[in-house]
Length: 117
Image (cartoon, helix red, strand yellow):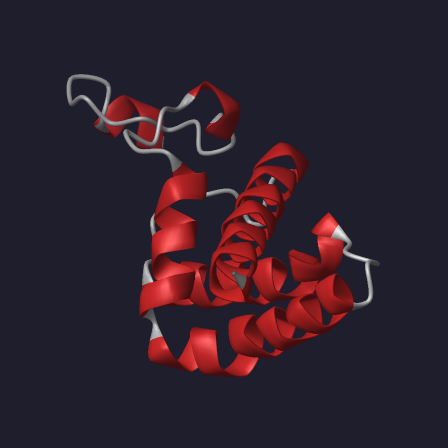
């Protein structure tokens, strides 16, 4: 007897690779930003060093919005380990990666400018 025959009357999804069709029910970029700021380990190891580099680059007029790319990548790896949701993609989608980097860049730049005054 095949597995499909056993579960044909039960509502079970046997197609595990249809991740693009599934909705997570939340915005992963917002959730990842929240996680990066509120997880002490991720913030201390990955985000804070990039904030210092960003501040230094702003002082010299050479700010790069993708400076946070490595921190976002490492934070997503930690996020998926802490929250093993099956619907999450194994790697962070490029558009989400750019959105998170840009949002961190904007927030840090605004904070730097407001503290400078």
